[in-house]
Image (tube, rainbow, N blue to C red):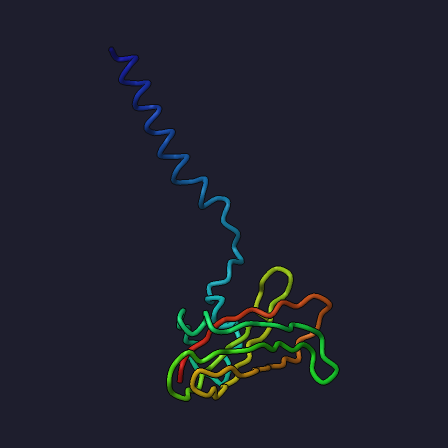
Length: 139
């Protein structure tokens, strides 16, 4: 009986030691404590709004290197409503690892039941940049 109790106590102690010490022993000392969002460039210092209903009406047709600026994105937005509306479109320019290099916003006025072309540019550089629709909302 003593042997069984001793074995149980040893197993509990070993489990406590392993669960309590291993994780903290492997933590590097130089972990950044600043949230990653602080390093993102926010367009015009505003919050990014995203409305799934508006997003469904936005397309990105072009994402390419530009002669005028580093990279450009352009596409169309449709307005399914019966009234003219202005929409904000925010595009993130990311690298191959999906890190945000820049964000740009454009505001587009679209006629009732109409369609409009939008475009944004960024001075980011690189051979492979992705253009990602980050937000779309009605203003």
